[in-house]
Length: 270
Image (cartoon, rainbow, N blue to C red; front, side, top):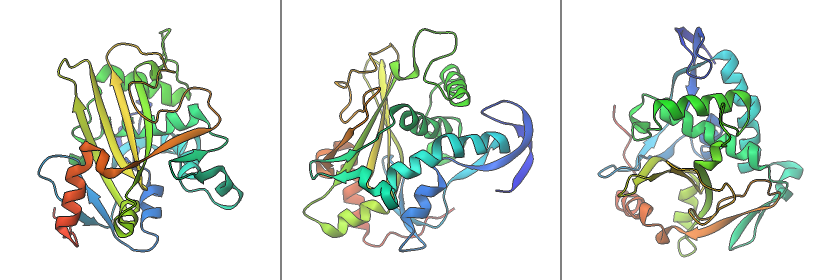
């Protein structure tokens, strides 16, 4: 990936030529385009409509060393998790009511998705302007990602004491065409905020899955799965991602209606 002008790497802070860093890993876009050079994009915000897109969002964020660190430490595992090949296909089993991930690696999976949330949080692109973690949390997450650990530096807490991860497989049994469309739809980060502003939720969709982050201002038990559905627990080796009809998720009702109303979405402008 070509280097650009000098700047401060957002992960390590060093001045270096910055790479065109992908916010959502390129592998997700590449797999979504297997049968078509285009895919359907959707930004999860009121008033937005689906659009046809050829490229994936990226900007100059990381130095080459940190870009390689993300690739080898996180994205290789994340790609294998979502797009298994060869013998690895036996490790991901669709059970109807859930998708079973065998030989699941909680920490690697958590850090992989945390790296996407962090990139969205530090990004200046319009697609991710709704993701705000705060400078303090962004820096502490960056340290976790650099050190490949869940432990927050200088604290007795782990990052998953404050951010819970949920993985939900989206289904639409009554509409096979729409089910297939979901696999090619990458919709950007949406968010919810509690009335008391004590917690908030970020979510995005890719590869037919909904990835959810529950962020709390006060520490939680990492093994407590009551605050968010389909959350893997620390240490689990066999994770079951719940299969949920998309109509049951109120956050995605607008997505359903927009996709159906749009028919063949128009190309995004600007």
